[in-house]
Image 1: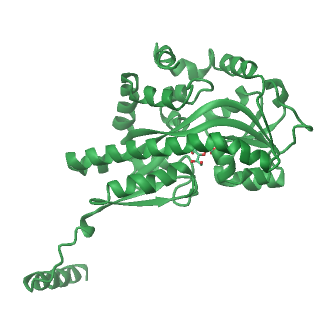
Image 2 (image 1 turned 90 degrees about the horizontal axis):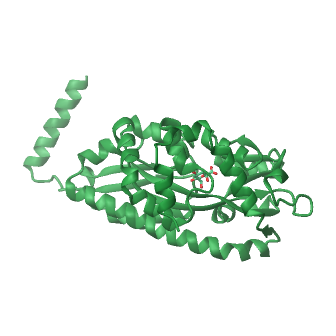
Image 3 (image 1 turned 135 degrees about the horizontal axis):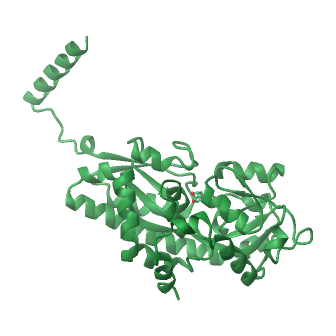
Length: 334
Ligand code: KDO
């Protein structure tokens, strides 16, 4: 049956071609780039990829974004790319650390200083062995670094009910952190009681009180409307958070050198555009959140930094960091 069908289709195609009716459809040759992320469509990284990346590769690729973890669950994207079920994602260093523990260095509290520092680190030769390993062993290319922002502690309790100035003040606080070990470690290092949970479940968990809080940058607190179900943000800035534009190596290898250059430039341009938009939002949103009645204040940052850094010293994570890399990262900062 199959062969008859194939033969019939072939015959049909041949006769159409002979009649000169075959349209020179480039669309049919285009590759589809499925991108999966737990982020929303209005998140600035999503906006930048759809608005800057997609049109720049549109000649040869159809960008197909899937938001809110609707295609692939948060944390499984890299595996999906490796097995050919996905072409792109916005991957975190914490997710990469589940495969390559040394990536935890980029997920460690108070290591990256700001957005520019992230870019300097990503483009420095120190990143080359990290990128190569991911490419060789996972079949994933890390094209560019995206800025998510300064993660802060966002709680249901008002400041009157719970004022957080030091890590000790977070003792017993049930803080939602993303699922992987590197994230959970950071939650503990902050002094809290971390609870693993997918991003898409946070709003409900905050509204029902099954967690006391969550940590994310201010633009995420607004985009996901966490301000509706929380009362304070403690500006701990414990992680200047990043994501990598992750791209299938198998797909990359099928592209021409010109197409590869276009994909690379599109990723860099999208990352830069998203970074500027996110930085602006971080600045503007303090006023917005205060208008919504939230308490926003800075704790004793020195106490948090010292406490968090002390937890990493001698940890299993720190043992996986290649010799000298932390010093190089620090040297690229202010
Ligand atoms: C989150 O789950 O808290 C987190 O901020 C982790 C990031 O690595 C990133 O995946 C992000 O969620 C999602 O893209 C949603 O913004």
